[in-house]
Length: 463
Image (cartoon, rainbow, N blue to C red; front, side):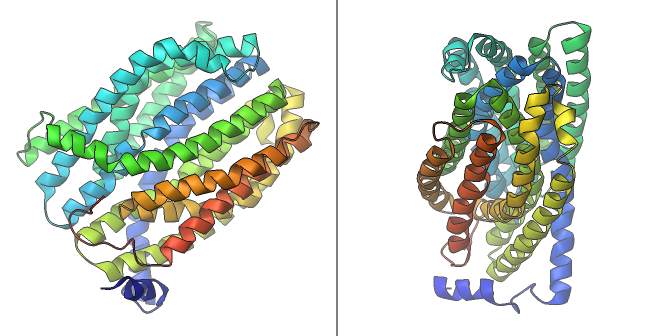
Protein backbone atom coordinates (compact mmCIF):
# COMPACT_ATOMS: atom_id res chain seq x y z
CA UNK A 1 0.00 0.00 0.00
CA UNK A 2 1.51 3.38 -0.96
CA UNK A 3 2.17 5.93 1.83
CA UNK A 4 -0.53 8.28 0.55
CA UNK A 5 -3.15 5.59 0.91
CA UNK A 6 -1.90 4.72 4.37
CA UNK A 7 -2.11 8.35 5.35
CA UNK A 8 -5.73 8.46 4.23
CA UNK A 9 -6.49 5.48 6.45
CA UNK A 10 -5.43 7.44 9.52
CA UNK A 11 -7.76 10.28 8.66
CA UNK A 12 -10.66 8.04 7.68
CA UNK A 13 -13.13 7.75 10.55
CA UNK A 14 -14.64 4.66 9.00
CA UNK A 15 -11.39 2.67 8.80
CA UNK A 16 -11.06 -0.69 10.51
CA UNK A 17 -11.85 -0.26 14.22
CA UNK A 18 -13.10 3.27 13.67
CA UNK A 19 -16.81 2.56 13.99
CA UNK A 20 -18.39 2.92 17.40
CA UNK A 21 -18.29 -0.78 18.22
CA UNK A 22 -14.73 -1.16 16.96
CA UNK A 23 -13.65 1.86 18.97
CA UNK A 24 -15.08 0.36 22.15
CA UNK A 25 -13.23 -2.91 21.49
CA UNK A 26 -9.98 -1.03 20.95
CA UNK A 27 -10.56 0.98 24.11
CA UNK A 28 -10.88 -2.24 26.09
CA UNK A 29 -7.64 -3.56 24.62
CA UNK A 30 -5.85 -0.28 25.27
CA UNK A 31 -7.03 -0.16 28.87
CA UNK A 32 -6.17 -3.81 29.46
CA UNK A 33 -2.56 -2.95 28.68
CA UNK A 34 -2.43 0.67 29.83
CA UNK A 35 -3.99 0.35 33.29
CA UNK A 36 -1.44 -2.18 34.60
CA UNK A 37 1.32 -0.29 32.76
CA UNK A 38 0.18 2.88 34.53
CA UNK A 39 0.79 1.32 37.93
CA UNK A 40 4.19 0.00 36.91
CA UNK A 41 5.31 3.23 35.29
CA UNK A 42 4.13 5.46 38.13
CA UNK A 43 5.94 3.20 40.59
CA UNK A 44 9.24 3.95 38.85
CA UNK A 45 9.27 7.75 39.40
CA UNK A 46 7.72 7.16 42.82
CA UNK A 47 11.14 5.84 43.84
CA UNK A 48 12.57 9.32 43.25
CA UNK A 49 9.39 11.02 44.46
CA UNK A 50 9.67 9.17 47.78
CA UNK A 51 13.34 10.10 48.03
CA UNK A 52 12.41 13.72 47.30
CA UNK A 53 9.74 13.81 50.01
CA UNK A 54 11.99 12.20 52.63
CA UNK A 55 15.18 14.09 51.77
CA UNK A 56 13.24 17.34 51.35
CA UNK A 57 12.74 17.56 55.10
CA UNK A 58 16.50 17.37 55.67
CA UNK A 59 16.88 20.87 54.19
CA UNK A 60 17.29 22.76 50.93
CA UNK A 61 20.93 21.71 50.30
CA UNK A 62 20.34 17.92 50.49
CA UNK A 63 17.23 18.33 48.32
CA UNK A 64 19.15 20.36 45.73
CA UNK A 65 21.90 17.72 45.81
CA UNK A 66 19.33 15.02 45.19
CA UNK A 67 18.06 17.10 42.27
CA UNK A 68 21.51 17.11 40.64
CA UNK A 69 22.19 13.42 41.32
CA UNK A 70 18.70 12.47 40.17
CA UNK A 71 19.14 14.42 36.94
CA UNK A 72 22.43 12.64 36.24
CA UNK A 73 21.06 9.18 37.00
CA UNK A 74 17.88 9.76 35.05
CA UNK A 75 19.96 10.97 32.12
CA UNK A 76 22.08 7.80 32.13
CA UNK A 77 19.10 5.51 32.52
CA UNK A 78 17.03 7.59 30.11
CA UNK A 79 19.70 7.27 27.43
CA UNK A 80 19.46 3.50 27.81
CA UNK A 81 15.67 3.33 27.83
CA UNK A 82 16.03 1.87 24.35
CA UNK A 83 16.64 -1.41 26.19
CA UNK A 84 12.87 -1.42 26.69
CA UNK A 85 11.72 0.78 23.83
CA UNK A 86 13.58 -1.23 21.19
CA UNK A 87 12.76 -4.58 22.81
CA UNK A 88 9.01 -4.04 23.14
CA UNK A 89 8.21 -3.49 19.42
CA UNK A 90 10.72 -6.16 18.32
CA UNK A 91 9.17 -8.75 20.62
CA UNK A 92 5.64 -7.62 19.72
CA UNK A 93 6.29 -7.80 15.96
CA UNK A 94 7.61 -11.35 16.19
CA UNK A 95 4.76 -12.36 18.44
CA UNK A 96 2.28 -10.85 15.98
CA UNK A 97 3.95 -12.83 13.20
CA UNK A 98 3.49 -16.06 15.20
CA UNK A 99 7.13 -16.50 16.33
CA UNK A 100 6.93 -16.67 20.15
CA UNK A 101 10.33 -18.38 20.62
CA UNK A 102 11.94 -15.66 18.48
CA UNK A 103 10.17 -13.02 20.54
CA UNK A 104 11.48 -14.40 23.83
CA UNK A 105 14.97 -14.85 22.38
CA UNK A 106 15.02 -11.15 21.48
CA UNK A 107 14.06 -10.25 25.04
CA UNK A 108 16.74 -12.46 26.59
CA UNK A 109 19.42 -10.88 24.41
CA UNK A 110 18.19 -7.46 25.49
CA UNK A 111 18.61 -8.41 29.16
CA UNK A 112 22.19 -9.59 28.58
CA UNK A 113 22.98 -6.32 26.85
CA UNK A 114 21.47 -4.41 29.78
CA UNK A 115 23.61 -6.26 32.32
CA UNK A 116 26.79 -5.67 30.32
CA UNK A 117 26.11 -1.97 29.89
CA UNK A 118 25.17 -1.60 33.55
CA UNK A 119 28.41 -3.12 34.83
CA UNK A 120 30.58 -1.04 32.50
CA UNK A 121 28.79 2.21 33.34
CA UNK A 122 28.86 1.55 37.09
CA UNK A 123 32.62 1.07 37.09
CA UNK A 124 33.20 4.12 34.91
CA UNK A 125 30.82 6.21 36.97
CA UNK A 126 32.70 5.78 40.24
CA UNK A 127 35.50 8.05 39.09
CA UNK A 128 33.16 10.50 37.36
CA UNK A 129 30.61 11.02 40.17
CA UNK A 130 32.40 13.88 41.94
CA UNK A 131 33.50 15.96 38.93
CA UNK A 132 30.16 15.54 37.15
CA UNK A 133 28.27 16.66 40.26
CA UNK A 134 30.60 19.63 40.70
CA UNK A 135 30.06 20.66 37.07
CA UNK A 136 26.61 21.97 37.99
CA UNK A 137 28.28 24.70 40.07
CA UNK A 138 25.73 24.58 42.88
CA UNK A 139 28.13 25.06 45.83
CA UNK A 140 30.19 22.74 48.04
CA UNK A 141 27.40 21.49 50.34
CA UNK A 142 25.02 20.71 47.49
CA UNK A 143 27.80 19.07 45.44
CA UNK A 144 28.80 16.85 48.37
CA UNK A 145 25.22 15.62 48.80
CA UNK A 146 24.91 14.97 45.06
CA UNK A 147 28.20 13.04 44.94
CA UNK A 148 27.23 10.88 47.92
CA UNK A 149 23.86 9.93 46.46
CA UNK A 150 25.27 9.31 42.98
CA UNK A 151 28.24 7.19 44.11
CA UNK A 152 26.06 4.81 46.11
CA UNK A 153 23.33 4.65 43.47
CA UNK A 154 25.78 3.41 40.83
CA UNK A 155 25.79 0.01 42.54
CA UNK A 156 22.16 -0.43 41.50
CA UNK A 157 22.62 0.63 37.88
CA UNK A 158 23.07 -2.88 36.40
CA UNK A 159 19.91 -4.03 38.19
CA UNK A 160 18.01 -0.96 37.02
CA UNK A 161 18.91 -1.64 33.38
CA UNK A 162 18.01 -5.35 33.62
CA UNK A 163 14.61 -4.33 34.97
CA UNK A 164 14.12 -1.97 32.02
CA UNK A 165 15.01 -4.63 29.44
CA UNK A 166 12.89 -7.31 31.12
CA UNK A 167 9.94 -4.94 31.22
CA UNK A 168 10.33 -4.46 27.47
CA UNK A 169 10.21 -8.24 26.97
CA UNK A 170 7.00 -8.65 28.94
CA UNK A 171 5.30 -5.65 27.34
CA UNK A 172 6.13 -7.03 23.91
CA UNK A 173 4.47 -10.26 24.98
CA UNK A 174 1.37 -8.14 25.77
CA UNK A 175 1.86 -8.61 29.53
CA UNK A 176 1.79 -5.39 31.54
CA UNK A 177 0.39 -6.96 34.72
CA UNK A 178 3.60 -8.65 35.84
CA UNK A 179 5.67 -5.42 35.64
CA UNK A 180 2.96 -3.79 37.77
CA UNK A 181 3.33 -6.39 40.52
CA UNK A 182 7.12 -6.25 40.48
CA UNK A 183 7.24 -2.43 40.45
CA UNK A 184 4.64 -2.17 43.21
CA UNK A 185 6.53 -4.51 45.52
CA UNK A 186 9.78 -2.74 44.69
CA UNK A 187 8.28 0.63 45.58
CA UNK A 188 7.01 -0.60 48.95
CA UNK A 189 10.39 -2.09 49.82
CA UNK A 190 12.15 1.08 48.68
CA UNK A 191 9.90 3.38 50.72
CA UNK A 192 10.29 1.31 53.88
CA UNK A 193 14.06 0.96 53.59
CA UNK A 194 14.55 4.66 52.86
CA UNK A 195 12.53 5.77 55.87
CA UNK A 196 14.54 3.48 58.13
CA UNK A 197 17.93 4.29 56.65
CA UNK A 198 17.47 8.05 56.29
CA UNK A 199 15.99 8.76 59.72
CA UNK A 200 16.21 5.57 61.78
CA UNK A 201 19.85 4.85 60.96
CA UNK A 202 20.67 8.54 60.54
CA UNK A 203 22.34 8.04 57.15
CA UNK A 204 20.62 11.01 55.52
CA UNK A 205 20.94 11.24 51.75
CA UNK A 206 23.25 8.18 51.72
CA UNK A 207 20.46 6.08 53.27
CA UNK A 208 18.08 7.18 50.55
CA UNK A 209 20.44 5.92 47.83
CA UNK A 210 21.21 2.66 49.64
CA UNK A 211 17.56 1.75 50.12
CA UNK A 212 16.87 2.29 46.44
CA UNK A 213 19.84 0.11 45.40
CA UNK A 214 18.62 -2.81 47.51
CA UNK A 215 15.11 -2.54 46.07
CA UNK A 216 16.43 -2.41 42.50
CA UNK A 217 18.44 -5.62 42.85
CA UNK A 218 15.46 -7.40 44.35
CA UNK A 219 13.34 -6.42 41.33
CA UNK A 220 16.04 -7.53 38.89
CA UNK A 221 16.27 -10.99 40.47
CA UNK A 222 12.51 -11.44 40.17
CA UNK A 223 12.64 -10.60 36.46
CA UNK A 224 15.52 -13.00 35.88
CA UNK A 225 13.44 -15.85 37.31
CA UNK A 226 10.48 -14.89 35.09
CA UNK A 227 12.67 -14.71 31.97
CA UNK A 228 14.27 -18.10 32.68
CA UNK A 229 10.88 -19.76 33.06
CA UNK A 230 9.56 -18.16 29.85
CA UNK A 231 12.62 -19.25 27.87
CA UNK A 232 12.44 -22.84 29.09
CA UNK A 233 8.73 -23.07 28.27
CA UNK A 234 9.48 -22.62 24.55
CA UNK A 235 12.90 -24.27 24.44
CA UNK A 236 14.94 -21.07 24.07
CA UNK A 237 18.54 -21.04 25.34
CA UNK A 238 19.69 -18.64 28.02
CA UNK A 239 23.21 -17.96 26.82
CA UNK A 240 23.77 -14.58 25.18
CA UNK A 241 23.87 -14.75 21.39
CA UNK A 242 26.42 -12.40 19.87
CA UNK A 243 24.26 -11.58 16.86
CA UNK A 244 21.23 -11.06 19.07
CA UNK A 245 23.02 -8.80 21.55
CA UNK A 246 24.66 -6.72 18.81
CA UNK A 247 21.34 -6.61 16.96
CA UNK A 248 19.61 -5.31 20.09
CA UNK A 249 22.28 -2.61 20.40
CA UNK A 250 22.00 -1.65 16.74
CA UNK A 251 18.20 -1.49 16.75
CA UNK A 252 18.32 0.91 19.68
CA UNK A 253 20.89 3.22 18.14
CA UNK A 254 18.39 5.70 16.73
CA UNK A 255 16.36 5.58 19.93
CA UNK A 256 19.54 6.34 21.83
CA UNK A 257 19.99 9.53 19.82
CA UNK A 258 16.31 10.38 20.28
CA UNK A 259 16.61 9.94 24.04
CA UNK A 260 19.90 11.85 24.16
CA UNK A 261 18.11 14.94 22.87
CA UNK A 262 15.42 14.55 25.55
CA UNK A 263 17.99 14.17 28.31
CA UNK A 264 19.99 17.11 26.97
CA UNK A 265 16.88 19.27 27.27
CA UNK A 266 16.30 18.16 30.86
CA UNK A 267 19.95 18.63 31.85
CA UNK A 268 19.96 22.08 30.27
CA UNK A 269 16.89 22.90 32.36
CA UNK A 270 18.61 21.77 35.57
CA UNK A 271 21.76 23.75 34.69
CA UNK A 272 19.59 26.82 34.20
CA UNK A 273 17.88 26.21 37.53
CA UNK A 274 21.23 25.86 39.31
CA UNK A 275 22.29 29.25 37.95
CA UNK A 276 19.21 30.87 39.51
CA UNK A 277 20.07 29.81 43.08
CA UNK A 278 19.83 26.95 45.58
CA UNK A 279 16.17 27.47 46.47
CA UNK A 280 15.20 27.97 42.83
CA UNK A 281 16.96 24.71 41.98
CA UNK A 282 15.22 22.95 44.88
CA UNK A 283 11.82 24.15 43.63
CA UNK A 284 12.69 23.11 40.09
CA UNK A 285 13.71 19.65 41.35
CA UNK A 286 10.30 19.14 42.94
CA UNK A 287 8.54 20.41 39.80
CA UNK A 288 10.57 18.12 37.53
CA UNK A 289 9.88 15.17 39.82
CA UNK A 290 6.14 15.88 39.72
CA UNK A 291 6.23 16.22 35.95
CA UNK A 292 8.21 12.98 35.66
CA UNK A 293 5.53 11.19 37.67
CA UNK A 294 2.77 12.62 35.48
CA UNK A 295 4.77 11.84 32.34
CA UNK A 296 5.19 8.21 33.33
CA UNK A 297 1.47 8.05 33.99
CA UNK A 298 0.72 9.35 30.49
CA UNK A 299 3.36 7.01 29.12
CA UNK A 300 1.16 4.07 30.15
CA UNK A 301 -0.85 4.81 27.02
CA UNK A 302 2.38 4.99 25.03
CA UNK A 303 3.43 1.58 26.36
CA UNK A 304 0.08 0.15 25.28
CA UNK A 305 0.68 1.79 21.91
CA UNK A 306 4.14 0.27 21.54
CA UNK A 307 2.84 -3.23 22.23
CA UNK A 308 -0.32 -2.95 20.12
CA UNK A 309 1.28 -1.11 17.19
CA UNK A 310 4.19 -3.56 17.04
CA UNK A 311 1.86 -6.56 17.23
CA UNK A 312 -0.45 -5.12 14.56
CA UNK A 313 2.37 -4.37 12.16
CA UNK A 314 3.86 -7.81 12.76
CA UNK A 315 0.51 -9.28 11.75
CA UNK A 316 0.44 -6.91 8.71
CA UNK A 317 -2.88 -5.35 9.85
CA UNK A 318 -2.26 -1.73 8.88
CA UNK A 319 -5.92 -0.56 9.13
CA UNK A 320 -6.03 -1.80 12.73
CA UNK A 321 -2.81 0.06 13.50
CA UNK A 322 -4.33 3.28 12.14
CA UNK A 323 -7.45 2.80 14.26
CA UNK A 324 -5.35 2.15 17.37
CA UNK A 325 -3.47 5.38 16.71
CA UNK A 326 -6.66 7.44 16.59
CA UNK A 327 -7.97 5.98 19.83
CA UNK A 328 -4.65 6.48 21.61
CA UNK A 329 -4.53 10.15 20.62
CA UNK A 330 -8.02 10.67 22.03
CA UNK A 331 -7.06 8.93 25.26
CA UNK A 332 -3.89 10.99 25.54
CA UNK A 333 -5.68 14.32 25.22
CA UNK A 334 -8.47 13.47 27.66
CA UNK A 335 -6.11 11.94 30.20
CA UNK A 336 -3.86 15.00 29.99
CA UNK A 337 -6.82 17.28 30.62
CA UNK A 338 -7.93 15.27 33.67
CA UNK A 339 -4.42 15.33 35.15
CA UNK A 340 -4.17 19.07 34.49
CA UNK A 341 -7.30 19.75 36.52
CA UNK A 342 -6.00 17.56 39.36
CA UNK A 343 -2.60 19.26 39.44
CA UNK A 344 -4.06 22.77 39.34
CA UNK A 345 -6.44 21.94 42.19
CA UNK A 346 -3.51 20.64 44.28
CA UNK A 347 -1.13 23.53 43.63
CA UNK A 348 -1.66 25.03 47.08
CA UNK A 349 -1.10 21.74 48.92
CA UNK A 350 1.77 20.06 47.08
CA UNK A 351 4.61 22.36 48.22
CA UNK A 352 4.05 21.45 51.88
CA UNK A 353 4.34 17.77 51.06
CA UNK A 354 7.81 18.09 49.57
CA UNK A 355 9.54 20.83 51.54
CA UNK A 356 9.64 22.54 54.92
CA UNK A 357 11.39 25.57 53.43
CA UNK A 358 8.87 28.42 53.10
CA UNK A 359 10.76 30.12 50.28
CA UNK A 360 10.97 26.92 48.22
CA UNK A 361 7.23 26.44 48.72
CA UNK A 362 6.58 30.03 47.58
CA UNK A 363 8.54 29.41 44.40
CA UNK A 364 6.82 26.11 43.70
CA UNK A 365 3.12 27.06 43.83
CA UNK A 366 2.95 29.25 40.69
CA UNK A 367 5.25 26.83 38.87
CA UNK A 368 2.83 23.97 39.46
CA UNK A 369 -0.06 26.06 38.13
CA UNK A 370 1.86 26.80 34.93
CA UNK A 371 2.78 23.12 34.67
CA UNK A 372 -0.92 22.21 34.61
CA UNK A 373 -1.43 24.27 31.44
CA UNK A 374 0.90 22.07 29.42
CA UNK A 375 -0.16 18.62 30.61
CA UNK A 376 -2.81 17.98 27.87
CA UNK A 377 -0.16 18.82 25.27
CA UNK A 378 2.19 16.37 26.99
CA UNK A 379 -0.49 13.68 26.76
CA UNK A 380 -0.64 14.13 22.99
CA UNK A 381 3.16 14.03 22.73
CA UNK A 382 3.66 10.92 24.85
CA UNK A 383 1.03 8.93 22.96
CA UNK A 384 2.40 9.72 19.50
CA UNK A 385 5.93 9.08 20.69
CA UNK A 386 4.84 5.61 21.81
CA UNK A 387 3.06 4.94 18.51
CA UNK A 388 6.13 5.76 16.43
CA UNK A 389 8.43 3.79 18.76
CA UNK A 390 6.08 0.83 18.42
CA UNK A 391 6.35 1.15 14.64
CA UNK A 392 10.15 1.15 14.84
CA UNK A 393 10.36 4.69 13.44
CA UNK A 394 13.50 5.48 15.44
CA UNK A 395 15.33 7.34 12.67
CA UNK A 396 12.64 10.01 12.41
CA UNK A 397 12.40 10.35 16.19
CA UNK A 398 16.16 10.75 16.44
CA UNK A 399 16.54 13.55 13.88
CA UNK A 400 13.47 15.48 14.96
CA UNK A 401 14.70 15.20 18.54
CA UNK A 402 17.72 17.24 17.49
CA UNK A 403 15.42 19.77 15.80
CA UNK A 404 13.27 20.07 18.94
CA UNK A 405 16.36 20.69 21.06
CA UNK A 406 17.52 23.41 18.68
CA UNK A 407 14.15 25.13 19.13
CA UNK A 408 14.33 24.83 22.93
CA UNK A 409 17.80 26.27 23.57
CA UNK A 410 16.94 29.86 22.49
CA UNK A 411 13.73 29.70 24.54
CA UNK A 412 15.72 28.58 27.57
CA UNK A 413 18.18 31.43 27.15
CA UNK A 414 15.34 33.95 27.02
CA UNK A 415 13.71 32.46 30.14
CA UNK A 416 16.92 32.71 32.19
CA UNK A 417 18.04 36.17 31.12
CA UNK A 418 20.23 37.97 33.73
CA UNK A 419 18.27 39.66 36.49
CA UNK A 420 15.43 37.13 36.73
CA UNK A 421 14.89 35.92 40.30
CA UNK A 422 12.15 34.56 42.54
CA UNK A 423 8.91 32.89 41.41
CA UNK A 424 8.93 34.71 38.07
CA UNK A 425 12.27 33.16 37.14
CA UNK A 426 11.16 29.60 37.89
CA UNK A 427 7.84 30.13 36.11
CA UNK A 428 9.60 31.50 33.02
CA UNK A 429 11.91 28.49 33.04
CA UNK A 430 8.96 26.12 33.18
CA UNK A 431 7.12 27.94 30.39
CA UNK A 432 10.14 27.42 28.15
CA UNK A 433 10.24 23.72 28.98
CA UNK A 434 6.61 22.72 29.52
CA UNK A 435 5.12 24.75 26.66
CA UNK A 436 8.01 25.61 24.33
CA UNK A 437 9.92 22.34 24.23
CA UNK A 438 6.92 20.03 24.61
CA UNK A 439 5.11 22.08 21.96
CA UNK A 440 7.98 21.62 19.49
CA UNK A 441 7.77 17.86 20.03
CA UNK A 442 4.00 17.96 19.44
CA UNK A 443 4.52 19.58 16.03
CA UNK A 444 7.15 17.14 14.77
CA UNK A 445 5.29 14.07 16.04
CA UNK A 446 1.94 15.26 14.71
CA UNK A 447 3.31 15.86 11.22
CA UNK A 448 4.72 12.34 11.06
CA UNK A 449 1.62 10.61 12.42
CA UNK A 450 -0.61 12.21 9.77
CA UNK A 451 1.46 10.61 7.01
CA UNK A 452 1.97 6.93 6.29
CA UNK A 453 5.73 6.47 5.88
CA UNK A 454 5.98 5.00 9.39
CA UNK A 455 3.48 2.19 8.66
CA UNK A 456 5.87 -0.62 7.67
CA UNK A 457 4.36 -4.11 8.13
CA UNK A 458 6.16 -7.41 8.74
CA UNK A 459 7.96 -9.38 11.49
CA UNK A 460 11.02 -7.11 11.27
CA UNK A 461 11.55 -3.52 10.21
CA UNK A 462 14.68 -2.36 8.42
CA UNK A 463 16.45 0.13 10.65
